Image (cartoon, rainbow over all chains, first blue to last red; front, side, top):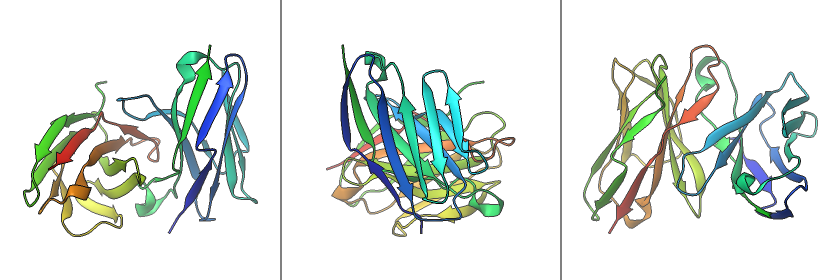
Length: 115
Length: 113
């Protein structure tokens, strides 16, 4: 089955710096890669996602890049703010047919942004 | 639209008991997936239902089961609870246009004593 590795497990940055979180996946048939942000005691919230037919996607201060050949994808947060502090999870899944609905998650990255 | 809701939010049980958790998806969504979140194992997929049929199942013992009703609401049941079943149980619903996108509920925190 699919396996997703996420690094680093913790990341500490100063406000205004950039943060990068990296994930690798094992299933070459995976073609959907979402990122979730989970604040303490809250539900995971989808912040950005990318499909395998796209190499990069941006949404304001957040961007995701995908390298299908190397089977890795990354989350980039620019101009970090204290409210970006949370646990970030990457995930991967196949789509199509009965494959929808099964996400395999990385272990999570605890991001701390210091004012 | 209202988001995904889960009941109850907190639950305390003892070993050997069984428990039923409920999830109401976003209106119009027909897919409901369940995940277990623990500090040690992270987020792990349990199973997914679509139109009352289980489409996918993760690597959990048969004590974990679920079902989906005609209104897309879903329940999961854990029988013969073990201490290791203590976790946050999250459900997520998937849309009809972007089927792969999942939106999570607030979760049910289960503590087994």
